[in-house]
Length: 312
Image 1: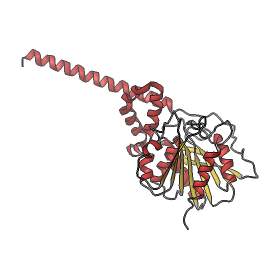
Image 2 (image 1 turned 30 degrees about the vertical axis):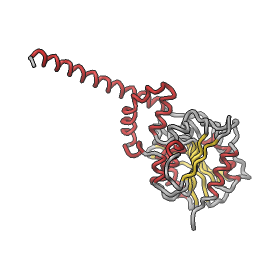
Image 3 (image 1 turned 90 degrees about the horizontal axis):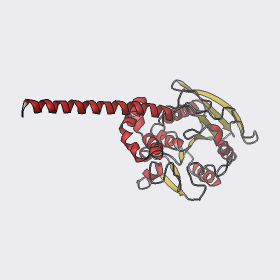
Image 4 (image 1 turned 90 degrees about the vertical axis):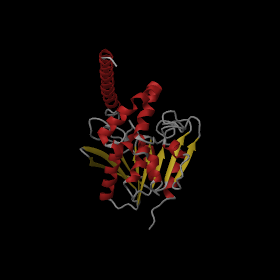
């Protein structure tokens, strides 16, 4: 090979390396910008309507506790039960939205605890950080409740991001009696990709490595990689997975806990594909009409919890 050809190849190699480095740098910067833009704070209802459950159904008390450096706002509705249902809200959802379920669960004899996640509602935080943050917030909530009370049964009821967190909490918390996940996303990356592909289409997968890297920088590899389906299969805690058949945000065949558990060999998981046109979308599965709880979902959850009480 001649000297001139070697110089030409070196020049091409240098240019190629520069192009690759520029691409990586620009992609990473864009990822950080978009990611942080998606996970901003969300505080729509700041009037504290959480006392809306009437006194004849349950007594009410507010609670504040720490999740890392952020103070979370929690609400306890007591019926003098030995069992409590913790409601974990989805992304961009606050505790007030779940008042209809609080009312129904209390009327069925449960205590209920609700909380706003970091960067949401009345809780602290300059951003909602990312999907794995809700796992950290739920862990802090479980620790707080365990320290402050002696419930015989602790049940988890989560929707979307909350459904993912409820299942993922099974990895570290052995005192959970049962879990109900409604329209749950399976993992943090599934949640991001569901949002991204819905916004810009399949081209979003080109940014997958950068999203994974940045999320791992924020939360660590283990927490970022934790999936609901793996945690369900690694425990014997009963889990009810309810998925809307016409859910377009977290479809039954992709991104959802349901899609990852449909063919899994797991004796502790029960799957329900809810088919009720107009009431089986991502949000309508919970609230067919404004201000009302879906009686079918309420019934599924209440019966499942009552059938899975802790052993003496």
